[in-house]
Image (cartoon, rainbow over all chains, first blue to last red):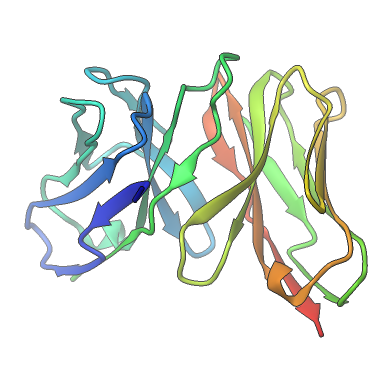
Length: 117
Length: 111
């Protein structure tokens, strides 16, 4: 069982280019999340999806979009990358979204290191 | 808006000691609180999750407690080992702010 896979592992991107970060989970989890981690700012939620077909905005959604066409995949797209989007991006999943159902433990992927020049 | 604080920012102790990491939050209307560890250059590994209705959770040498009324959680590590060296993060999920992470405690266990 792979858990959560993210691709690419790292990327150097020219400002203004479009980029999609891929995230796939094989645990059949309902909820998925995208975070960015920056020195001095910690981990921040970008977007989330409580179940296939639905998405929501987190703390820092501007400049990013997501889709959840099926249970397993949750791609994150930067439509026109800017240097401030240089970061480490983590995808995570949980069996259920927070709210008291249980199964709320989040499992993280290995991350994608993105440098926007 | 929810704020999550972790103290201390860094901690170094000799092997074998018991230790406590602290996490405080400002909004007590939470769904859950989760403790993670992160090794350098790696993703996060979940350690314990405490639901809003629970007071504590235990896994092996780890025990996490939650006091919503005072906005505090502690992670107790018994008989620390060099392999416990990592950054420990707490994260609080609330309906208003979604998930907010603390800045972490960097733990070093000296052999």
